[in-house]
Length: 114
Image (tube, rainbow, N blue to C red; front, side):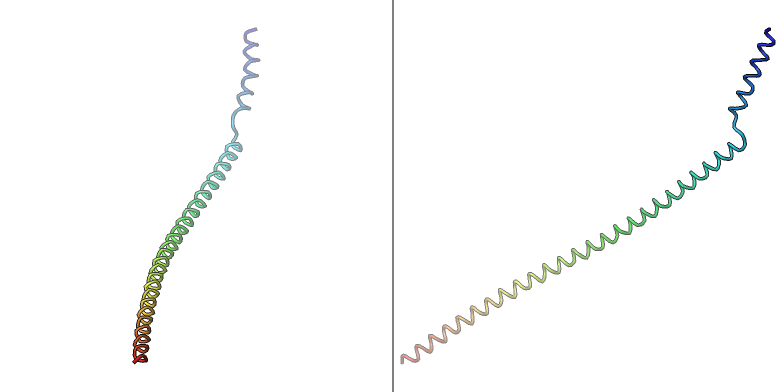
């Protein structure tokens, strides 16, 4: 009886072990899936590198635009200072001209009284 039990258990265990073993087709399928995953990972890496390069280029452009904006602000400030100085100079010339006109008017009035 032990021999028949051993024989029956071997007949059940052996097919069970054979079913759970991977076949060549299964291995090839897994390898193909792994290659596909590797290809997708490589493409994602390339896309990430391209995005990083584009971001770096955008940062360089932004920095250049900031430098240009700063230069334009400095130039505008200088122009504003020059305009203020020109206004002050014109006001001073106007004041001097008014004083001269007033003196000339006073001299004329004095000469008319004589």
